[in-house]
Length: 255
Image 1 (cartoon, rainbow, N blue to C red):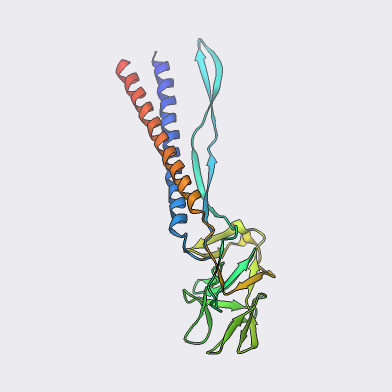
Image 2: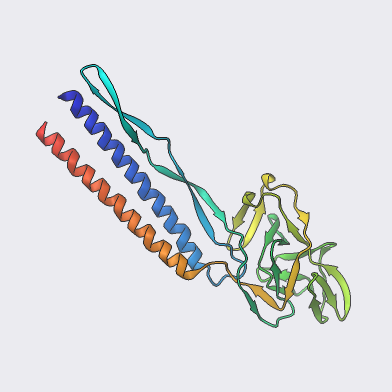
């Protein structure tokens, strides 16, 4: 009797741990999806998806009179191994601002930050007081020859990324691509750092839409449905824990 109590209690505790890990997974998925919705108006934002992995399953045996029979396997839960960016293109919006640029297809703009070179899809540029082309956050936009000086002249950027000031070409936007995009780590809303696993960035001949910005690639309806499903899964795991807790209480009281 004591052995059966021990085995039953052990399975119940494992079930509680499994359901608890499910709640933790859904909580982290909720954070990722909520962040996607919060950045739906952020230009160049790439939506995130949580990567979920199942923990190893445990075989369950029935032991009776020195014989053992396999009943099946018991899941031991899941975990979230970070999030990944979905680099599908976002919708384009025309602004008629000559300093706005949107990348068509693949590629990233290279910018200089105090932490080093970073990469972004946000092509909303402006001119600093020192006459250099920068992002709205003040990071220097990199050209193929370094920082791009435009001064106070009339700036135009064509579809090849060439920057003209008063009709004279001064540089070309540095657009790069990577062999392993999954090795790009996001900083803030739309900046990415390239880990060594991403490989050496190489120049990418991208097509640029001048006077246009790329919107976030977040589908609001899809994310709302996703949030509802996450909430339901969280509540289901919560009910499983309550059921196991009640069963464990009955076992303890009866034994």
